[in-house]
Length: 186
Image 1 (cartoon, rainbow, N blue to C red):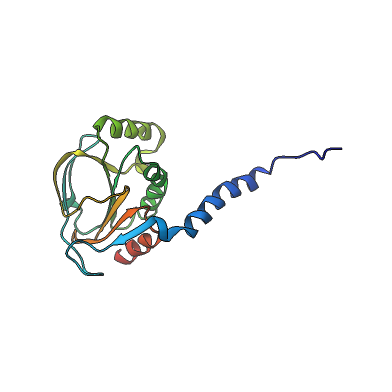
Image 2: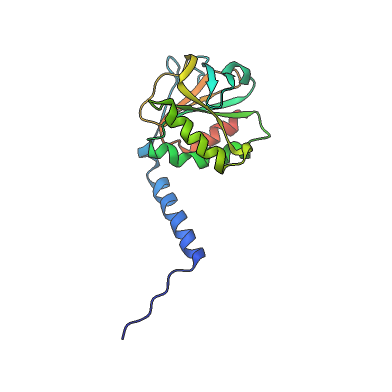
C-alpha cells in the first residue's frame, strides 16, 4: 500500500524556495563579496572624486556632478552576468526604500553591445512602474568616466559620499554590510 503524497502547501513551498537560497547566500558571504579600499586611499579614507557623464539608455543627458549632495551607488553590470541580473530586484527595492533620502543608484552596463542593455531596459519599461526603474547607462555612451577604476568580476560597485568621492568598492555580489554603510552616510 502506498502512502499518497501531497505537494507542500503553497505558503511552505514559497517560504522554502525563498529561505534556502538566502540562508546559503548568507552562509557563504565572505567568499562572494570582496570590499576594497579606493585607489590611493587608506581604509576609511575617501578616494578620488568620481566623474561620470554621458547619455542614459533612454536618451537623457547625465552628469554625476548633478548628484553631489547625495550618496550614490554606482553598479557596473552586464546582461550576461547572472549574478548581476539576480541583484536587480534587490537594488530596485533598496532604492525605493530610500526614495525620500538623498540617495541615488546608477547602473552602468558593461555589455559589449548597446542593444543588449537597451533590450533589457525595454523589458523593464513594459514590466515595471516608472518609479521602479533606475538610472541606467551604457559604457559606450560615456563622455567622461574617471575615478571609477575598472573592477572584475562583475558586478562591480562603487559607493560615493555626498562630495562624490569613492569611499568603498566591491567586486562580485554586494555584501549586506554595504547597505549599512550607505545608511551611515545618509
